[in-house]
Image 1 (tube, rainbow over the protein chains, first blue to last red):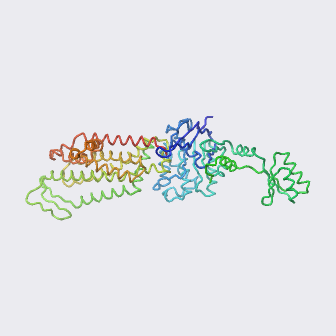
Image 2: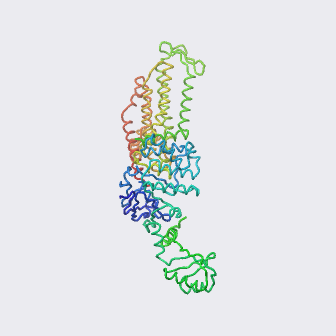
Image 3: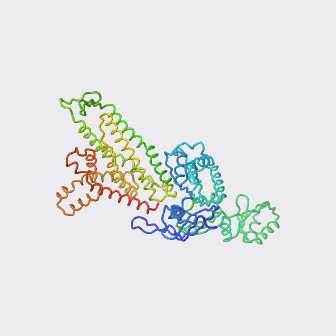
Length: 319
Length: 284
């Protein structure tokens, strides 16, 4: 199966002002997104996420390398025929109604007015904007504008979706609805590239993730692969609840190299492997402690992200 | 084609939303209405025997006035007036088309559609020209029909003057588009275009200006600018000359030559080509 989005050795250099120094925004990005896949693009500010998306859409020209959408090079406007895009901080003309906005942008993607009419009504219904169909966009709240942007990205039934912060300004219920909608669109075989700072959103939504740092792919894989990679690098943490948790028991854990730590009524232990963990449990049981809970601590995407960013001190942390 | 039509429709919707279209049509309609109601002519045997303006008799003496000459005089004066006012209004109403397109958060929405950058820019140019043409043709056409109704004299050249007016607007709008792609500023686009309009009018006296200059390089510069810039004054004179036809003085008839059209057309074409080139290569 050929990739819906493919980027090979993508480089982009900017010149900072007239005759200014050259800034490397991208330094050889490689990635591919398959049809039906929800792919998250992560990275701190200035890592190259937006530049990558802009090159994919022909908004910015690459210095070197290649990028293609559905097999067509991005320099060809036809590559965008089946692509929907939601830019961050988009501004639809305020004098248009929701219906007019979707009609104009739908026709700009080559869809006939006849085909658009039912599609617009359906989309606005799915995005809970039916009652606002003939209201001018300037009256919309930020969350509603965001939903309209999503509708505009979907109005021509694209095979590829490039979404920049799609849940920005949307309330928690709306976020869940958008997540569900994206999952439903991916289930239809659409490739979705999600560009976001919101790690929890990415973790809840995406199948695979690439973390960009200084214009390079610093890590790429499924959420499980990335968080497991994180776990391999150190001892695994466990949350232990037992009674009584005496100081003597903690001292013994310490002697056994578990680096115990009292946290909100439970103890956090570090175990090298299953044998080490069992030895710690035996020690607790031998001291008469009754175990009520033992939970492995899972690394989160945020842990992976923070570790990667820490490795590069000259970039801003995520928000 | 569908995409380009949608883009042109958006230009008109924007003009309507900004009230430029409505205001222009309202002002034009008011002018037409005043002319229709206020001017009453008494035509006897093809000559003007009497006239009333706002119900007041106009003193004409004992002699009758040649109606054809009077109407031609009015039509040529009105066409010349519309050439200046129509051009100014057209630039004022369309100079924002490129800067607004290039605004952050807006340009992404347009460029992410399967439309090339050059067709996108040209469709906005076409939208701007259609907007200007609708305004000019509405006012000129309505006045033409009113003159026919009031005097029974038909001078198609008066209506065809719209062609020269729109030709001048096309060249200046291309320049406004170029400035728009370079600066992303509506205000700068308007100011620079108006500056070119006036400077070109001054440069129509290039020979006299060059002769008055002591430095050779300055004289060469004036002559060079004259040939580069659009010939706004000559086009205005050409509008009047076209309407007057053989009735105008010989000096006026000489204004209707090919040179101003060729050089102005070249200026517009080069500006539009440079605007397309700049827009095509720009990183957003």
